[in-house]
Length: 145
Image (cartoon, rainbow, N blue to C red; front, top):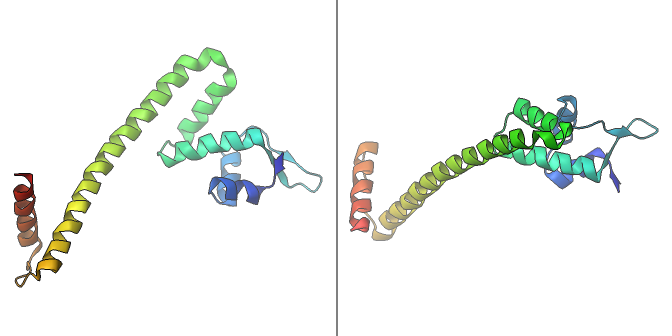
């Protein structure tokens, strides 16, 4: 099956300019064109793009994606290098996820803190950020007991 640019962009959740940028950046093997010069994408092109989009979503720079793709195109003899790169990307994502989990936990505690203040009709609101931070820490310490 073949697709035109806006169909591919929609399918992958990216914009057409982003799609064209990936091609110009050398991340895609040659894209066919129809008789009027419009790009025509195949299922294989979409698979390449899916990989590129996933790598971009986790922060892999374009130059590193290009290097990874060059290794893919060289064939199976580059599997050890690809393994090393993918392992590094995975470790980086795990570190980011851990940091995000810490942030999410803090945000959840803040939501609960504010909800409790609203529910109890706290008469003496904190006047400064430091007062609020101290009260927040105290409430967290109480909850951990």
